[in-house]
Length: 319
Image (cartoon, rainbow, N blue to C red):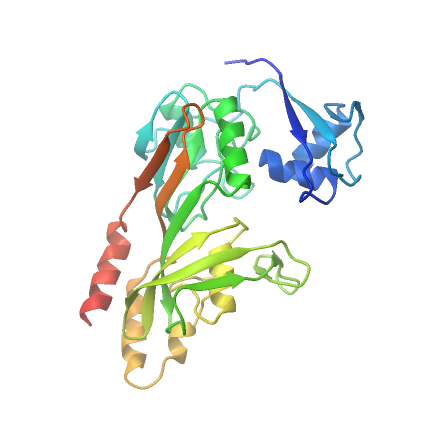
């Protein structure tokens, strides 16, 4: 369905900083490329004048963004089963299966959650762009669990703003190697692209602020089950932060390869067996809470560990 253009207004606060394109990309939850396209098309004004993508934002500025009409996305609906935990006129909450990519990309043009959603609902919010309709936040391919999807542009805007203001609470469960020294623990370390491997993220000087809160749930022989709360939402944040503190996610093929081999003594065989049992990274988004974008009513959802991870956890508890 073709919608109407809409204008969003943002007033820059005293704690906002940086380039205009980066600032708007974060506020609108879209890519910098999409923001730069809006600026080049004359759809962004700062205090009534034409905007420049590289200019710095300043406190008190009024930024108006005219968002184009949602267009029919060039993605084919696919009849892929999805676990819809909740749905109303404004949004859906989905329990994503491990192995499913959230939105189409160069390496994954089909078989994504977006393809499945387009077969499930008649329309999705167009703010995310042609390849990411409705997507407010994402999960890695091999991370299972809860995420919220917007069905209307207004809901998308409200949920994206709530995410920016850290009003959406996301809790994860992860099995990690070794034993953390303290609980609760806050990991506050900036994240950016790993300069030695562009496929990875890393804790780097000058990276974007990233804060993860860690709490011990269960102690196992050579690993632990942790609960993690995101204060920020950087790419691979939990996985990078856990590697940074020396306790990477079990089964993580990018940040935790070979850690089981470092377990010595009586823990060696246990760790190798745990690794053998895990078919993907042991990371699951189990709890999601937010205010409904229309009514403001509190919404809270939980999804227990899926069978593949629960089987591993049960073995770890008993051995």
